[in-house]
Amino acid sequence: MTGTLVLAGTPIGDVADAPPRLAAELAAAEVIAAEDTRRLRRLTQALGVHTTGRVVSYFEGNEAARTPELADALEAGARVLLVTDAGMPSVSDPGYRLVAAAVERGVKVTAVPGPSAVLTALAVSGLPVDRFCFEGFLPRKGGERRSRLREVADERRTLVYFEAPHRLDDTLAAMTEVFGADRRAAVCRELTKTYEEVRRGPLEELAAWAADGVRGEITIVVEGAPETGPQDLGPEELVRRVHVREEAGERRKEAIAAVAAETGLPKREVFDAVVAAKNAARTGPAEGK
Image 1 (cartoon, helix red, strand yellow):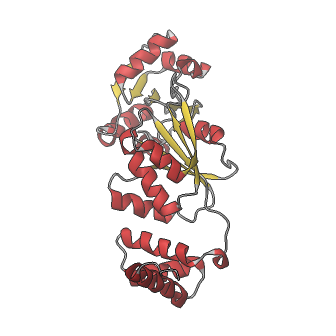
Image 2 (tube, rainbow, N blue to C red):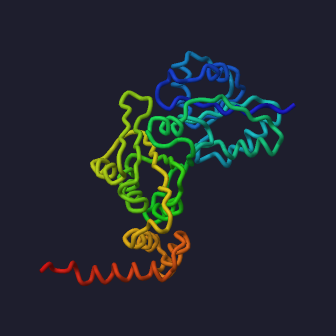
Image 3 (cartoon, rainbow, N blue to C red):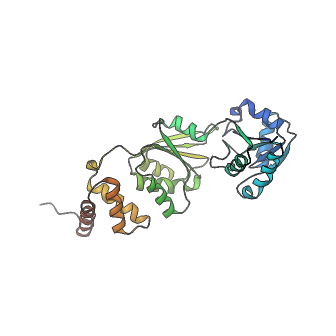
């Protein structure tokens, strides 16, 4: 008989949030694959658990190479427990490759549900939670980051992102540029920890706050795009959308065509808005009489 792969959710901050089953699974596992074995040791000590299974590291750097070894152990009948530093394995953490390998070999896959930064941030954000999509981490490079944001600029579901603290100011600035200064958002910092903080407000306001530097684990929740039709888009918004696409590397002709397609407006109308804005920038504001 084949073994069982157990994906175990771990606390995202407060160790008291550990689900009761976690301790039992840690004690019973024959193999424990941990993203960080030192953190695993601290977790078991905090829970008062004595592990007897073999402990191996399983992180981004060795995930591809170690997956076949763990899959072989599962196929041979072992009970393998997978834990990451915080939250549920495979959600922006190692795990997907092992789950896919286990499924391919007919191995049972189950989970110990646990804390989730995604759901916790959504719940406390004050933004709509009936429909949402998780976007994980954005690309590190500015052009790629704006391009990824542009892909979901018209998404009406609430958006959830993870971000590193040292990139938060750049990310919020890019969101302000692509989504608009007034789009509502929440920055959730150090969830369930001693210095937990949730900042809510327009993206432009949050970007200004983050410019001075922010520390800790970060989850960003952004309001979905408003349900506005083409008739509600003024020339300024059309020009902004074209500019965002040009900043991402598109030629102006392609950007105008894309904005026309996504709004349902004639290309001529978008083109005229861009030309008018260009002429206005060249001549400057008209003098009053």
